[in-house]
Image (cartoon, rainbow, N blue to C red; front, side):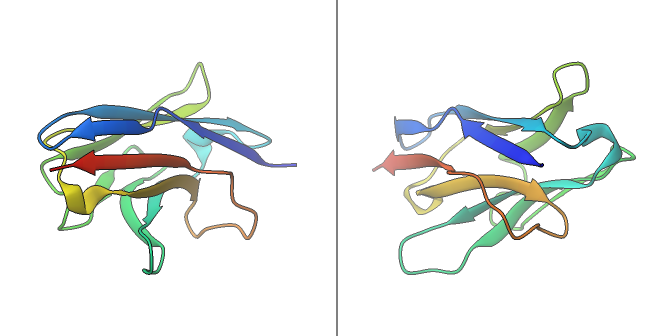
Length: 114
């Protein structure tokens, strides 16, 4: 059974940084395309950063140059380093496979104050 546990969210001022973690079990992240998704109030969930099994990364235009996805194979964990945060980055952040599996973790709340 796949389990994904997100952590690291919080309240930060505009311009600040956070690092999110996604501890995975039931899958091997280095063999799986993984992504960070977010859902803001009243909006659809969107993919913001992707990491392929081969190590290639991509990110949404809205976060390009500010967010970096990475993984630690030994810890079977995926990270999202978020810098220069903006109020519009406020959302619940989730990790999941790409394409996403139907079962989501609880997510971690990121709130950016202006």
